[in-house]
Length: 347
Ligand code: PEP
Ligand code: MN
Image 1 (cartoon, protein in one colour):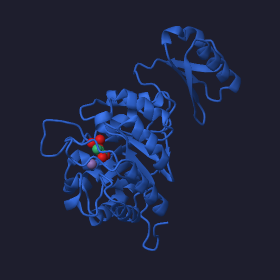
Image 2 (cartoon, rainbow, N blue to C red; image 1 turned 30 degrees about the horizontal axis):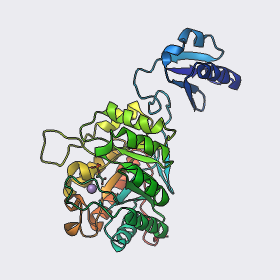
Image 3 (cartoon, rainbow, N blue to C red; image 1 turned 60 degrees about the horizontal axis):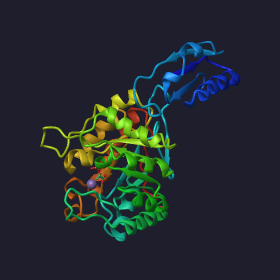
C-alpha cells in the first residue's frame, strides 16, 4: 500500500508513519515530490492496519497497490526516473541513443563504429561480448577481451558503454569494463541472474522476453530493484506473434502502457524487433513520437560480413541519416536530442 501525506507534511509526521511501518516488519520506500511525500510500504501488508495509519498526523489517504510489483510501480514513485550511465542520461527529458554492433568482433571494428555512432549523436556504445545465439555453432562472442575493447572505445570517445551479461561470471567481468549491463530477452525471467544484476551496482537494461507480458516484465524489473538497484531501464524489442514478415512484432503500444504503470525509462530496439535494416528508421521515429526515452540500434561498418545480425544492422550512412531525421520527432515531444556539429570530434 502507499500512504499519501498531505502537502507540506512535517518531517516528524513522515518519520512517525515510517516508524510504524518498519516496526511491523515492512520496508519503506520514500518518494518526496515538490509538494507531496508518498510513503510506500513493501512486504506483508496484512501486518499493517489502514485504519491505524489514517489517524497519524498529516496522512492524507491510503491507497492499496494491487500490482505485485511495487518499487517499479508508478504509484510508489510518481516522478519519472532518470538513469545515469557513464556520462549519459536516460529519461525523462533526453532522448538517449545506444548504438553499435550486435557483437564486438575486433578492436579496430569497435573503434571505428564507436567514432561513427558518436558523430551521429549516440551517447552510449552497445556491443555484445557474450552472445546468446540460437545455434551453439554461431559466433558466441569475445567475452572478456571484447569487454576490454569496449573500455578502450569509451576511453577514446567518451561514450558510455553497455554489454549483455548471461551469467554471474559475465557480470563480474562487466563491472570492471562497462557502464551498464543488459539482460537480454532470453534471460528476462532468469530470476537468479536478475538478482545478481541487482547486486552488481551497475545500471541495468532489461529487455522484454520474447513471449512476456508487460506485467511479467515489470515483475522482472522488481527482482532487480528489490536487490537495492533503482537504476533499471526497460527495452521493448519485439515479441513473438503469428506474423513472420518481421523477425518479431514491435509492440509500440507497450510504450504508453509502461508510461502509465511505471516510472522507469523505456527505450525501443527497432533492430531486433524488425530484423531488417530497412524497417529500422520508421520504427525508430514511431518510438520517439510516442514517448520512448531512447533507442538501441545495431550499427556495423560492414553489415554484409557481420558475425551476428548483419541483415538488421545499419551502415554508418544509414545511421547518420536516421538520427538527423529523428531529431524533429524528439523535439516535438519535448526531448533533448543533439547531433554533434561538424567540428566536434571524439574526445
Ligand atoms: C542483443 O541486444 O544483442 C540481443 C541479443 O537482443 P535480444 O535479447 O533483444 O534478442
Ligand atoms: Mn543482435
